[in-house]
Image 1 (cartoon, rainbow, N blue to C red):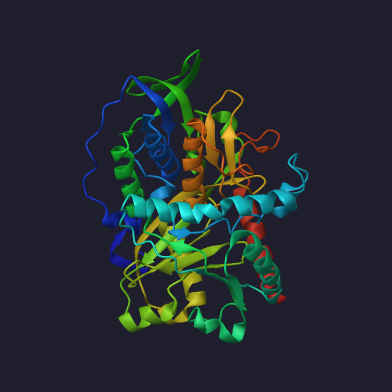
Image 2: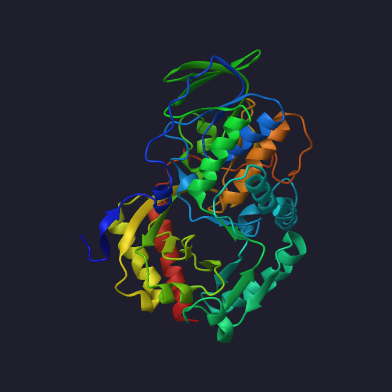
Amino acid sequence: MNAIFHPDFKALPYWWDALPAEEDPQEDLPARADVVIVGGGLTGLNCAIELGRGGAKAVVLDAEKLGYGASTRNGGGVSGGNSIGKGLSGAKGRSAGSADELINAMIGDAVDALTHIEAVVARENIDCFYERTGRFVGAFTPKHYEGMSAKTVQLNALAEADAYMVPRERQREEIASDYYYGGMVINRTGKIHPALYHRGLMEAARRHGATLVGHTRAGKLTKLASGWRVETNRGPIEAREVVIATNGYTGGLTPDLKRRLIPVASHIIATEVLDPELAASLIPNRRTLADSRRILCYYRMSPDGTRVIFGGRARFTQVTPDVAAPLLHDMMLLRWPQLKGVRVTHAWTGNVAFAFDYLPHMGQTEKGLHYAMGCNGSGVAILSYLGAEIGKKILGQTNSVPSFDGQEFPTRPFYTGNPWFLPAVGNWYRFRDWLDRTTA
């Protein structure tokens, strides 16, 4: 095994170490429900909680154990719409108006995504190490720094972001590294322990009357006069409404949604426990970190401040830890050469879902299935929020996110959901990053 791997290495998410060793007892699948939710992650559970608070009974199905996917595999960064608009050019020509108008409306509607998580964590008493510590986004080139400067105006005006620029000569106030050309601080962001957040949502959903059924794969969906019949490997269930909350794991159950999403693998490592003085020096203000490269990196300290959690697109497809972990380790050393010799204790992968227009989507299919998905790698806050908004929509309550709901959800001719082109895209992005950096 590569020397970077610790003798106690696990090819599992670091976050899972905080969960009970045994799964919860399997709940029975009822014959009927008000709403069936397919997908037991952050979207589905927030939807179930909101439905329960409004008096509706939800059944949440997951093909694996609940939270097996990206909901407990992500880096734990929590934003409030700050990442919306990266694909500006991809949104042009949409029926809702110009790209600028649509993205500005989405950023404004997404402001409450952060507030939503904070409210749920407080109201449901979820102990998940949530902190509003802000984010530092490093500029990969001087040109990127100029672009960020313009972005801060938009974020402050629309997203209440409390964002400001940090020039390169002051960069070490934010990160113990000279790798970037300065960057942007966004104060109105936070971080969370994703597995404990998800666990708390499960407990809250049960308190509000939801039935959570893991290891139960949804099969054929049949439209009935009274709603829907959902076939599963444990028998059928009927419901008035069905919510699809599968995001990066959307499959053949809903082929029309699958062909509108690009599942992209994101890889993460956790280091061994660091020397306390070294650990405390890396991120002086305890923020989450990201950068402006096309091959994105995102990283932070563990909740106890002892390890680095370092993620990124080591590859755009699923690869084993022996491939992804050394690549991420090298990326980490480019930013922090002082971590040379530090070993990796955990490495894992999860799928994020990109839309072709780089925008999040919520709505209903032609047949009437509800969905929220396509948050392009920034879904902890947005998908939590949109899941709750679907619950409110089903209950007949006021829509708080009109810019997201029912927008055109594009695909491409002949695309069926198999992203065969991702390796070529990854290579092109790496070349563009290399070119930008060498000509900076």
